[in-house]
Length: 332
Image (tube, rainbow, N blue to C red; front, side, top):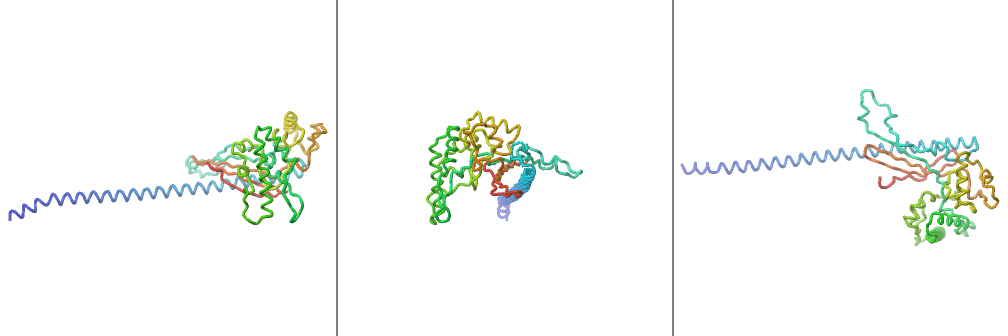
């Protein structure tokens, strides 16, 4: 009897150790499950917050785009009534500096504005007809089945002058122009998959035609890719683009045009020709103008520490302003 009791007493520490180990394992399991649940809840909250920010940013930037379109429409209405051209002194050409949106929103008096998400909006409207249109290099000849794409000599000379002014290799221009013409011709007459590059729709796409990224960075303020042939707006073009586009116009006279239009924007090409006062320097209705149809709208929204940027291409036909494409700028 004594041996049995001693045996039972000896087993109690082992049972207690097993029970303690089981309790520790249970606590560890419960803590792990609790931590996993908290992490999932935190992750769900972060995802919901990110989605809310994305939706809010989309609404705000869409509203800013619609507001910009309204400004362009009212500008077109004013120009129709006054006969003025599009120039850099108009309201659309004034950039919107970063402004705090919560300053303009009505907040309940019982709420503290410090608790509202801080949103800052900025943006600008850029006249894309202030730049040389790369697609102007292609000229269509003949009609119907006999239609063919060729190089426009006048526009090619303008681009050559621009490349010279910007110290860029002319070989890149020649190769890209020839590839563009080849692409256009194959797209019109060959139903098979084209071995050439896809026709560009944005400046960055010119890399497909062989222009280096470093050259594109230099060309960006002066060159654009638009879906149709466009004249250059002499009221908004830079002096480099003016000197390249107008045969016989040197940089000094181009700067004179820029300085004069700041005081009195040109209503017609004849106004600029009077200022140039040189019969050898003539403007062409086919290549130059004082009004614009294509604009780029850029919007930048800062929500707390998140920055979102978008840009859109719009075309204005009369009082109608349509969006051609809209994209989120990478890296923001």
